[in-house]
Length: 102
Image (cartoon, rainbow, N blue to C red):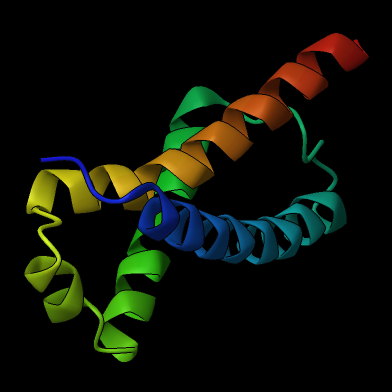
């Protein structure tokens, strides 16, 4: 069963904001170390997506919303997709921008 669109939009927006804050911090770290923040290797990209997903799960646990989502019919697979999709989309978008930049 798919979750409600309003619920998905609210959580996707929040997880995208968390990813953006995390990415700004990591980009600053990359910049200070002399690396291009837009051109990262695929394993680093995967690690950043996993880190953003972990931060999102911690945020869900901190707010005690995991049980609420379970009661609303959001299963483990849908929750995983809800947590991974925003940072993955953002990282792929940044990867495309870094590739086009030349």
